[in-house]
Figure 1: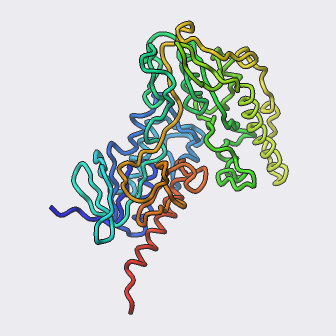
Figure 2: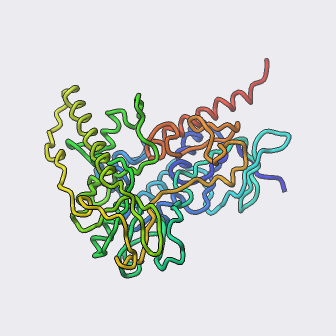
Figure 3: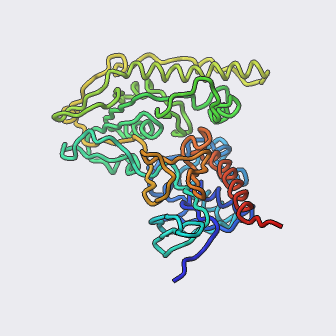
Length: 416
């Protein structure tokens, strides 16, 4: 049976795939979108119950559709985000096929294009866009053995406090996920230990503007600096509880035991690095740097934003930060569950083309890969720090769609 044919095949029906479809449609480029689950499946089934968007509704959306039932400064819940992308896909009439899994992509032999093997048959495409996003395979270090007598789950499998066994919980990870889950568990009456490492801790808002606004006006989405920021550190900002600045001292004062980095495990005891004070100090400095830059911007541009002197207040250290512990006896602390909020890793094993570094990470420039006809979209830092965010991937998709259009013109050229 002959394979179905299309010009461009997009793998992934989340925010990146839908954005890509919109721009290709506007350019009149034939394409298909394949999604192995439902539209925006990860918002639906791989997030905890109380999750909200990490930015306010006025910002965390595509340019051509506003939320009609959520205030602009509200952080939409996950179900509303999934419906937003469903609505958007219908609005642009995106050619999405759901519940179709892409199993393998290989280059055609003796002719241009790629064979895409799927659960519903083969498709031949001239171009393939990998729009599977940054949250592909849950990743956590194999520090604690499976037979240690404590349940271990990744944050992608956490739903709510009731699913966990009775007892204390160790949450590993100081980013948005770890902080939100730890606070939710503490509010549910659990004893909680929160292990954090290096992190970037900005204010959620300052002087009546959300941090996403400050990222824009201060040029931090693009991060064009002579001294680049650290990579691979947790991004400690969230929309939890209406949007509050992540403050590890506040978490400590509410009864969460904040720990340094989880290093090792031996005979039922977790070894904790002696790095908590330094990580807290660096987080404070990042926070204060934003306030300084924001104040300078307001003064330089004569903007009438009210001062917020209370934002400069640093709470006193709780006991767990003033005198950090370096060992955690799991049984002694009655820890029955460990939640690893330690992020994700890529899995492009299905994409069998020459587009990767030796370590399996994509080799690309602004999403255009080393393998002609293969593109990546939605990855962290694809073009800037906005690339894996809802607002950023839409603009990256426009750039890639433009490139696809140019390449199509080259292929179609015939000498007069």
